[in-house]
Image 1 (tube, rainbow, N blue to C red):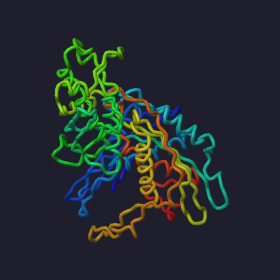
Image 2: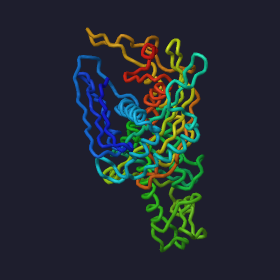
Image 3: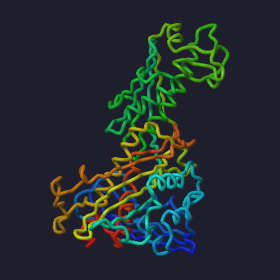
Image 4: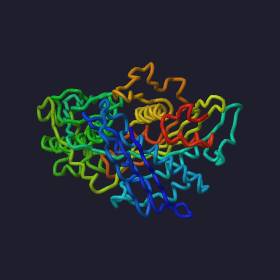
Length: 455
């Protein structure tokens, strides 16, 4: 639960003079988990001056816990609704207003962005969604009782890589590899992506690489939190791969085509060590291990400290587009189309990334239109602690969802990738609320957007 205030002062051309984002987040006496709803605001827009502040109020209620994109999901609703409201007041296209306030470096830290292609995501998304068909005047588009509106919003979620990542790679003399890391899989595709990463690093086909996880005896302590697991494991796999090449070099047979070279001159391609730019100078893993009379070779390495986070401002970004229909008779809101255009560095697996994006967007539909915990003011207990009374999106609530991405690698991130797990929900509620305003002329500032607030 949060209560937020956003105030924006702008010049006549829309450039921000002042940006205020402040408020209160409620926590329980036990299990305090505050919603840091200003995190994304710190890096999204340029303004001559900013005031960002979060106060915490301890309340006698059931202990709260993190859901997807804690802080950023609810903070983006307040900020991006205010951006849209300013665009309406200034008679500017909401995308044009955002473009005019695009920063060239992090507005609060002053650090350069490691990679930021948000405007490209907006360009791609607006073109595919058909943003030019939007009318600025509210309530103009209509189909019988249904008022039709379009809205957009920006999404951002910080890049995170938590120390503690480690991995073990074992090569066997039949040309297979096993990668091991103490991670856990919750359906986001960790095993698939890490198998891909290791196969690519070693130059092996996917069917000759296995990824083992879910065992505390394995190296590393890598949590599936903060959209950081892929980067944390991947950085450890890269470190282990570097160590593996060095160990293989020590086992080279006499007279090898690679004798006299250094590991820095070597690449790993097609199951072999090979001199860069000299394909004929190679030695296969199988040959190296068999000449050394080894059944296998195993190395373990830890990921380097995440120093990239100290030198660069690093985030995942999204440009979200929504079309809604609102019944003028009942106030029912139906999301009919949704598109997310994301800038998350290199996309390692298109299928699993699209699944993560869509899953987050669907959770955002629930945040925007139906999910609410009814609290008994006398006892502080939740009165709808079941899926009969606590409503979440079902198949009939979910529209066609398109997801696209820039796929531009970040040179400062391991594998060039940023997190995709939590960016999907961020900004969704604001995009829906802005579309509802475009359809009805009614600005809803308290989620969820239920029919009684639109009648």
